Image 1 (tube, rainbow, N blue to C red):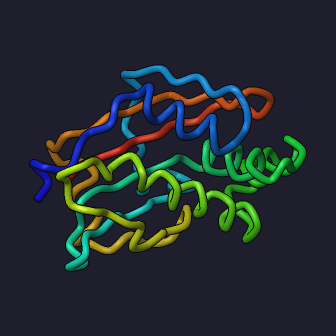
Image 2 (cartoon, rainbow, N blue to C red):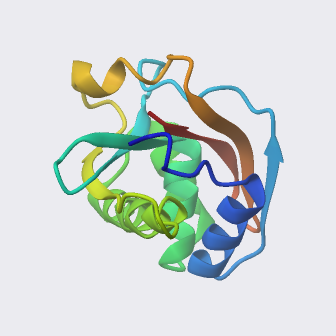
Length: 162
């Protein structure tokens, strides 16, 4: 299955994020891998096919998840900064960032490719199940990006096709 699931380009990620958030978004390739086991964790979206088989993952560090979650709802920047400073995502930012993950499923759904949908979201600091976590550091097709949301700040983003 994963051979057919496309690995989107960084420009595609930028375009979807910018269109969704309604702000300029800059991406730089070659960022470091997002690790949910790091301090404060990461937001993890697990994408599955119609058989509930894992096909892809998207990870955002706490910084990007909080900033993007605030930006999509037009919340003031200090809302995201408080969450980052506390090392916890409040429910409203988590819900907003989860909706971003849901829309990002469009990156995987090309013609003649298996349809993937967001199957599960793991909040920063929550445990990630072993069947998902095993892929995060694996040698799979991936892109790691540094992302900056204009007016809100930056963070890290990893996308993996498993």
